[in-house]
Image (tube, rainbow, N blue to C red; front, side):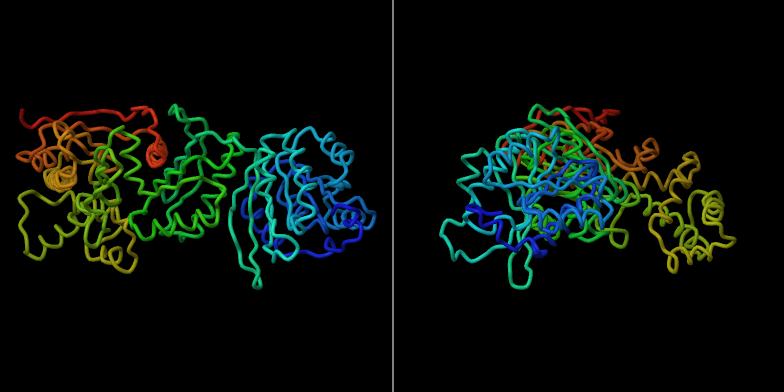
Amino acid sequence: METGGIGANQTHWKGVWPSAQHLGNFLCANEKLFHDSVCLELGSGTGAVGLALGKLGAKKVILTDYPKDEILTLLRENVEKNQLENKCEVRGLDWQSTESIAAVVGSLNELDFLIGSDIFYDVCTFQPLMTTITTFFDKFPRLRFYLGYAERERCYSDNWSIEDLLFVNNLQARLIQSKEDSGATVQIGVIYRNKMTGSIFCGIEGGATESHLVFVNTAGQTIGNSTTGGTNYNLDGIEKTVNNVAAWIRDAARKNDIQLPVKGLGLGLSGAEGARDNARFVEYLQTHHGDIAEQVFLTSDSVATVAAAFEHGGVVLISGTGSSCRVLLDDGRVFGVGGWGHVIGDGGSAFWIAIRAIRLIFDEDDGMETPHESTALIRKLMLQHFKIEDKVDILEHLYNKFQKSNIASFTKVMAQHPDDPAIRHLLFDAGEILGRQFVVAASHLPSEYREEVNLVVVGSVFKSWEALKPGFARAIQGSWIPRVNLYRPAKSKAFGAAALVAIKCGTRLPHPKNAEHFETLEFYE
């Protein structure tokens, strides 16, 4: 695998080196990316990495190494032992032979990935190896070359770099991640054709159970999308969530013919409220998945909702199982009210309404409160919904078998009876506390946006808007707010995340303005 016939006498190919193991781990973590693809491994040696691709679902894998019988025979034997004859082909490839390179490249009609582990092990191989790699890129310019490399002491030459060779061949490399292995540093990187990546932004709307992704160009057009499961790092941990997100983006980029890295990656994730954990998330993504994006911006899904709804910022009021209010300014700054969970917050949420209703029953029976309205229907619905015979049995649901969403679901049942006086009173109170959150959050808006305030409302509680509205209006009446334009959220909040990272990159995306306006409240002229 070296110039001057040295490759014929080397024995490096007989072992599996640490970089091969780490590159194999990377391939396994991104299994979907390589499914049904055509791959070619350079310097296969024993074929461990290429064989892994065959096992991972690649359509075809070409294993190449120096054209020596001993090497190629071992490769073919390993292909047979792994029962991959229908997927893996063994070819001789001499990096210093123009004819050998042309024969292999010319035989290919398609190629998605080049793979190589520890092939940059001797500086004297760099020039012929880069010539070989460039020939593949000349025929397949959208190729991606994933490689593993172990850092070595520069004992043979001070010029232990391929930077100049990449430049003259119009190629670019990015470090994906570094791993320590027995005192050595193993790096996983990617090489791709320079200028194949335009100014494309990726936005992610991440929920606890379902997440959405869009690729957006500078014209504001969505040029690709994808869906996956939950991406809440509070549920799965930061490292696992980052790894899953990165693998998802790579797979989605390939399926949508998007070349990574994108200019910017914006993430609006459920639960991403803490600055410290958000910073840890971004740092881990950048240090372990450096091929994904040039710049990364992480915020909560509520902030992404505002950015998706309004071009120059606004307010989002969320009331589902929990509640919170966030205001996004035109310069990207965010201020908030609430969002602190059911123990000390969640005012006006479905959980808050349900607990108020249950407490009302207990306080009435204890003589602590005498409601102005009959609680008979609330009592009946509570027993039916939780399948209990006595109100005391609800304590099992509140303590031993507590599930926040289960308690909150009682509000949906009550909301089907908005004409009941006691239920209407509960919804009025919920509307009022939500209105108070809105007034406080909106106070952060600059003067030029105070003539009328744009508010997007999100969450199941707002399905009872007509019952909430009187209390909501009461909270705003007498405040500084003259007019409120109410909107339902845009279908894709992922665009908002893309728009936010674009601003960080110095670009403003044309806004689709697809939030649905449904009402305007006016308070005084």
